Length: 281
Image (tube, rainbow, N blue to C red):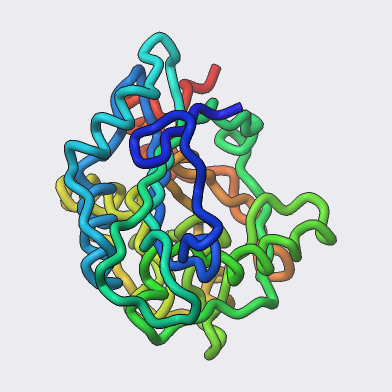
């Protein structure tokens, strides 16, 4: 069972009147921990704080998050997962909030997920989800506690064996993201990724990949694109904070990618240096 602190207490409980439970009125961050140190901590906290301000959630000082997190970390483990959850806290019946809510702060630690090593070495197959991605409002670009859109899209994969991820389109049929990842592809010698100003969440790993490549004079281009554009790509990968990246070997019904994927391998080599992924044997 994961180790959990609620408002800093190990034996506390969530109120049945908590708005996070009732309405998904809150945010979360999932953070990779490498040898007891949270990876890209500042970026995760910045996004949490920025979205909390957007949603007018109670502000939680960084020190409280750090105290809770360090109480749960096990530095003897090579990797852990820490999740931060912030809800608006208990409130009265109805959607409206008063602004006087004090918030509920949850931090929990879990073991590292056991993904198959072939996901990095030979790549994964992905499909296109029928469930459209909700967009058009600022809150849809935050990691809110309401994940019904992604839950329904992810459920589609249960009836499609062999797919490790599903790509989600917005209401106009354009690529935006995976059910739990961001998407990149190489086309015409340049790296491209969907624009996320209308729909989709700009993941921390996505942000760090763009930063790392930009520092090496390899720009990343954001664009609105339909799924058919992937047929023009020479390689493709998906990313998030725990997997780093998974190369994509096929998109169902669209394309099978070559096994030669130089840019994906270059990024994987970088992720090995920060111990997020294990070196292939």
